[in-house]
Length: 291
Figure 1 (cartoon, rainbow, N blue to C red):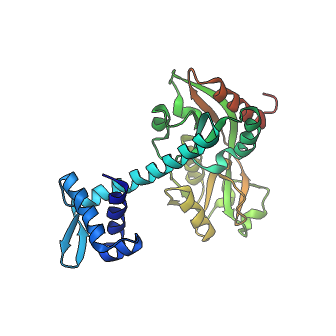
Figure 2: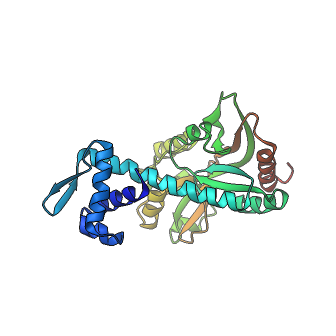
């Protein structure tokens, strides 16, 4: 399987038209068909059903193209990373986090570290999957940002405290609640609260407490982006750790009582390199000047 065969197959799967796929790739239609046929022969199964001028994906083809698309994207990303690395660097440090705002001072830390270790390439890895810890353990990153509960009883890991995130109430900027200095559960009476979406144990407990004792409706939201969209639409409000707070002017992040704090840690495997530890200490000093 070569890159040309991959490109032809994925483009045909997207357009479901050999002629259009060939035009998009600046190839002749016979050339594109030849590449796809070669790949099907190599694989031992048909990717496309051909019925005159129309084509469709076979069941095997659907599954294959879905996986191939992910592999192709990963391969291109890997090539770009290695090109960056080989051009200027001798060593790399990969730090895994689930959203850019989770470590707002990361760019500052990278800049400081570049003056101390100019040959070391620091690469943020944004992983929002439920398998973040497994990916880290498999060696896909050197540093992992986690809550303490995620790594309890894992003796092969070393955890460095970074900061505590505070749960706040997120509302639309023009919501009447935005005028309050601090919001309490009683202030949410008659409102709709977004819940779910992979909330931590502490946050779920707070959501349950608030909705149990007040006249508050709930609406399940499966991820933070959906939550913000519903808030912007005026459908609901939500309780969220302030590590997600960014500079979006459409939302107000309000203090909420009772106050819930959740510690976050930078985690490495035992035996991590001194360069990795040095970078962690820079981050910790930025968040904890007394460190």
